[in-house]
Length: 80
Image 1 (cartoon, rainbow, N blue to C red):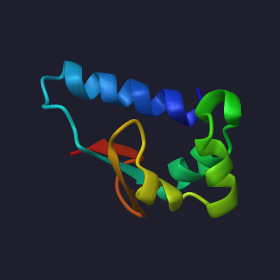
Image 2 (cartoon, rainbow, N blue to C red; image 1 turned 180 degrees about the horizontal axis):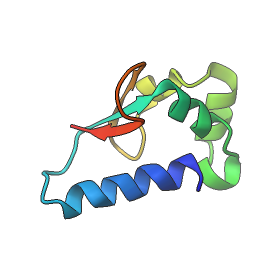
Image 3 (tube, helix red, strand yellow; image 1 turned 60 degrees about the vertical axis):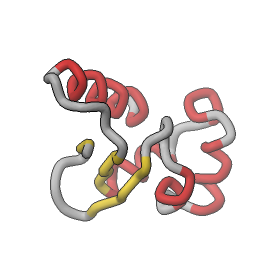
Image 4 (tube, one colour; image 1 turned 180 degrees about the vertical axis):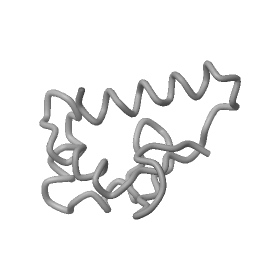
């Protein structure tokens, strides 16, 4: 499964568990790099920016309306 789908599945599980709508997505650095590997078909114009600026660009742009924080410890995908 690709990183985008893993994030969407984790988001769905987060909501189904009765948690409130998240505002922040915490991604491990490795999961952020996995997103960078996806192409235009998966991410649209975001893929070009990730190719040029790297995974830290997600912290500036966000992802699906969520603020992104890239972390070096903890789970691959977490929501706040």
